[in-house]
Length: 403
Image (cartoon, rainbow, N blue to C red; front, side, top):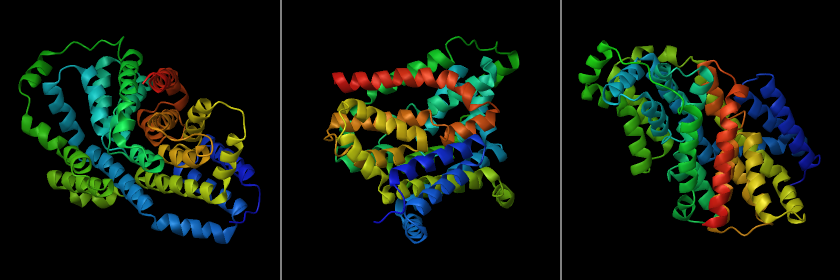
């Protein structure tokens, strides 16, 4: 495919443009989409960019991701607006009296729905329990983000690991088993950085009475939309978009508050997350179509850089820059194909490094929206995210060299 300007130069310009938009606090969806169009127009021209746009719109993966993103954020808003999140946290607290356990388990459970922005669902729950531990807004952000993501490296029903397996032709089991050490280290890092020095406020007589009167029915009913969605996705292998749609329907059926749905659909966050999902896929497709990934791959193949260093840095850097684990993986595989032979060892490192790079990305949807929810800032969150990610990367390298 012919290009107008040097694809690599256009790639750099487009990513720089994207970062400037984010710095100027332009919406993530708009920033991703605008950067994709800029890259397309400069490297492919208007007609070819239109072709890529159409292909992206009809691509099954894109359609599933966009609808899944729409329904997951809708579930989050519905949980809050219907008061179901209050029922869930109150009833769970009646059985689990340790707030440290609650704020770590809830985000992890919701992490079983691996779609952008999913941390918004656990944010209200974490907020209520974190207050009992005296956590400030920055630590609330870290705890919610970190524990939301600890399960995903070994979770087989996530587009991240499924995509890695498909592109590298390495089985899911071989990739997953090499992530166990990383997950254990992530859990430990989350505890030591976010929860170790916290002390739960004394339980009042009223709260003790509430604990003794825990309502199992309320707990099950309030948790049911999440349970159904996870079961459909993990156990029955139902498409995540369909599963989250069923979750939304379940909330509406439980609360019987369908009349307020039109008002809820006007929430800007719903459409911002949806556009961001589409924009990420468009940016990935334009990058591949422009030939930038091929040029980068050839350049790396002709360099004298150690293969392990390349394997670790490329997916991490791409995930950090574009804020998308699937996008980073999809770009990294063709770029690295000229440099490394994909074995279980190499595919596993590529996967986890892309994932950890995504954890620190300023365009990470979970991070962006959690920061907004807790009225914190990304810069302050890095105080905890950077050291936690650093020790996790160390664990990934140990796993790579030892196992």
